[in-house]
Length: 223
Length: 253
Image (cartoon, rainbow over all chains, first blue to last red; front, side, top):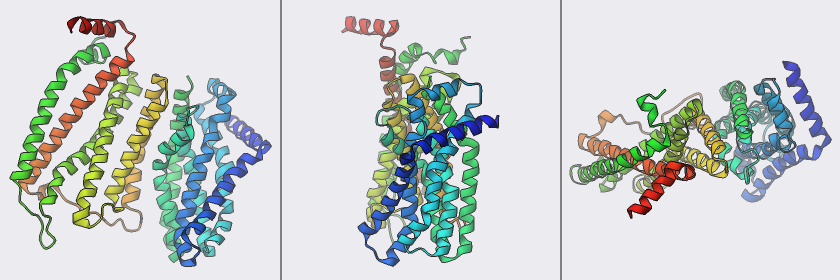
């Protein structure tokens, strides 16, 4: 059963490595959005320190959402997705594999680039550590919830903007606790722990539930 | 297998039933709303509270609370119909869910709007990032998302099921979202909004408020049934009974 998971994961990663620009576009989108805020609100250090966590998290939300369109779209267009649905393997596992690959390609790079962004906002080292940890726990949740929306809007006209409308409200809890962890962690490092624990709880719940919803959505979209 | 309740699951037999129920609900809605307005304007105190008194403008509460309650209740009903549709594969359930959505969205908007009008004189601001306000705004987004997804899909079967799934996912997320807004700091979940039990409300105000809510509920029934009749006619336009109906009406007029 897990060979299916690995083979889909391997295939998606391989495909993405053949077209690296897709991965880099998401990453640079994130960096650009984050870089625009200081130009808009001014470059005062105190202001940037306050804004930093929220801006980084909102940018991560947007980047992960924009990347979602590609989660199933290519496979849908060339018919691969239909074949995946026709196999006798559990669709939940296939969906989970695709979401995992998607997170490795779009979520993980955001976590790794966080220190660079932290420098732009004059965040302390410990704040950057908390931010990386919160992104590491939070971005998989974004990919998992987003997969439901991506599956529902598969092949629709204006799918991207519709996806934003459907998914962004559902991202709110991750945003609240992700940005909250960094903000609180900047004052006292230990205080961030409950926030991170909650994010981990969201991740566990999303891992258990979201693949089923996404699989059901895929079945509805492809009949 | 024709149980009495399942007979009306067929759009063809529900259509005339809805037609007979609509006037009843309109009359009930008008009666309840008129009673509530009279009671709210003439049988309630002119001002509330102690040092920072709520003057006559507090009367907006009768519409504000009713619309807010209905906005949440209608979302629950929408999800219930969507779930019934997904489980039993009944077309009419999806149509009901679909017909509820606009009324729910309007109530959500009205609750926000009346809240803003009320907030200006009493809080000094139209908008505040108070948990309840934010939750209501999110609810509005969920309604809009449902309507947008449904209207973006041309194939009505896929539209029904996709929107239904979204509504259910939304309902699962609603407690988490509301709780995260209510309790942004997990160490101390302070109640930011002033909590009020129904028992503490002045009897006359409570009566007007509950009657108004009943009236708005009856109004929701009436508009939903009217809308569902329209949806039935559009979806079933090709069937024999709709064409008979159209022909009969053409002859009658």
